[in-house]
Length: 145
Image 1 (cartoon, rainbow, N blue to C red):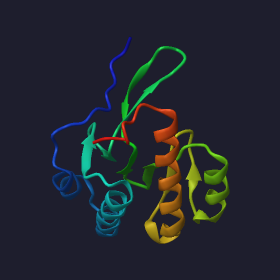
Image 2 (cartoon, rainbow, N blue to C red; image 1 turned 135 degrees about the vertical axis):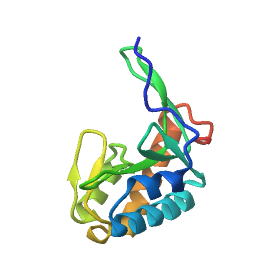
Image 3 (tube, one colour; image 1 turned 180 degrees about the vertical axis):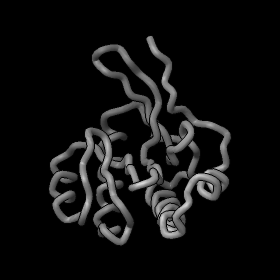
């Protein structure tokens, strides 16, 4: 079975932002997301793979037998938009998405061009709902770091 490439690394998060993110507004938005997600999750940021900033971790296992660890919350400041890894499909989150603002939905993440395009109070509710879902449905041990 293939080994997961998205694992915790020793890269310093602020070093990554300063070297990878060229746009000043995206840097500011990244720092704000770090502050918010740290507060909401209770975890410090860690780099997962080369470009994902994650908070906490949980263990997943699919019916296919594939399993691994992933951040409870996370984001990546991609060139054109942020990839937000914060969504678990629940009725509450589906309702909250309608109030989030301007975004695109991928299979496993939410794409946002800038934080000004979304309501961070709704974002907080989505993140907290996801944390609750992961605690109920995966091996989290309170979604430990």
